[in-house]
Length: 139
Image 1 (cartoon, rainbow, N blue to C red):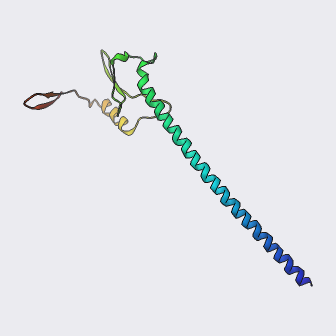
Image 2: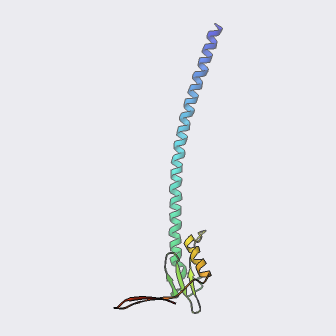
């Protein structure tokens, strides 16, 4: 009789353990699915946020010369867009200007342009077009 009770208790233990493991496995699968859904939502939010930051940056780049704090004559600023936002033509200097918003930093190509300017590797060129030929003259 004691063996019979022991067998029933063992069976109930394994039966209950199996049910618990099954339910936990099902619960874990549901939690993973919810986590995957949340990850996708977060990716969309991050993507939308970055997109908004880019749009805000583009607006800032285009509006900056017209802000009251712009230290130069906005009529003498010319937009380039890429890789540098623009050139400011002052009476005694010409400035290459990159406008940044938020925590944005110079790109690799912008850093290279900055370095070339620091090294005074800047020149003036004239490209002459005529009926006979075209001629580039770098000074």
